[in-house]
Image (tube, rainbow, N blue to C red; front, side):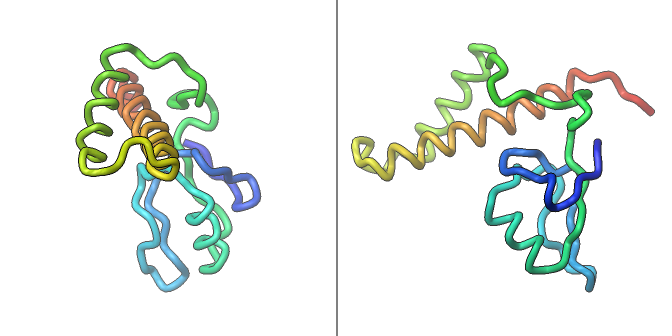
Length: 121
């Protein structure tokens, strides 16, 4: 886990620990994948730095890392379930599915990497 400043953060990184504002109010749970909106919220609430998972490479999952077929199938099945009541050919729905697939794949890959990593403590 690495501590990064707000300026170093980019959407797609996985939050290592919960983020609280200066009053101790929870802004975002640990394990969430950061979005541009999250970064704006951090800026608004005066958050200067946060912990992210794997920035040093120990637990990182590269965005273009190959996804094992069984994980890809599980993600696609879950996305199909989530979008079962939508019009699949609509351009907005297509983009939402793409983004949801990308986010869920990153989350599943990070979880798989965490489970397979040896305990460091």
